[in-house]
Length: 330
View (cartoon, rainbow, N blue to C red):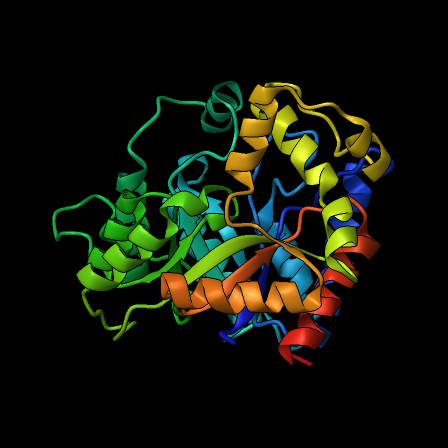
C-alpha cells in the first residue's frame, strides 16, 4: 500500500455547528496522528454552510501544536485570496515552529462563489499564476535586480518555505507542477475522471528542481469505510445529498443519514451525485483497501489522500480507524 493521508474540510452537520466542526477537526487530527496516517491537510472554502475550513493557516498552526508526528498542511491555500508575501511569511513561521512537519499546498481557484471571491480580494482579479510566481520569487529571492520587491526580505529569513504542492483537477495544474519541479496533488475526491491523465502528464513532463529530483503525485479520493459494504453505503448517503445541494445552489448543513436516505433524487440530481462520486471507494475494510491499492496502481499515484465528508465526527473517526487497521498503518 502507498502512504495514506487525510484531507479534512471540517464538515458541518445539521445537528452540529461550524464551531464544533472546527473542534472536531482538531480532535480528529490527533486521532489520525496516532493511527499512522502520513499527512493531515485542511482545505480552504468560504461562505459554505456545510464546510467550516475558511482559515487553513490558523488550523494548521493549532493542529501541528497538538499533534506529534503527522505532517500538517494546506489543501490548499487558494492563491486568488492571498497576498504572496504573506503566504511566504506565514508558512515560514509555521515551518519555524514545526520544522519538517508543514506542507504548503497551493491552488489557483478561489474555493468559493464569485461574490465571496470578490469580497475576499477587495480589488480587481488578477492571474493566479502571477501570484504563484511571486510566492516563488519571495521564497527563493529571485526577483530581477530592477524589481521593486527585490529588497523585500520575508521573515523569518533563515527558515525555508515548507515543501510546495501544486493542487489541481486539470492538465493545466499538472503542467505547472511539472514545469516548476514541485509535488502535485490531484483533486480526485471531486474530479476523478481526469486523474489518470493528469498524473501521467505530470510524471512525463516533470523537470527536476533543487527541491525535488523525481515527480511525486498524490491523489485525493472520497472514501467511506463502514463495518461492511452495506453499512458504508448507508453512511455515505449524506454526502450524495450534500453534493447535490451544493451544486444546485441550495447550500445547507449536511443532512442526517435518515434525511438523506429519505430524499428522492431526480434524474438530474442522480447525475450530479454520480459525477462527484465517480471513483469514490465506499465499502467495508477489505473493499476499501483493495480499492485503494487498485487506484494507486491504475493511476500511478505515489500517495493517496482520503476525504471522508461525513458530518458525524465519530463516523469519520471509525472510517479512518478501519482503513488504518486494514491497511496496516498502526
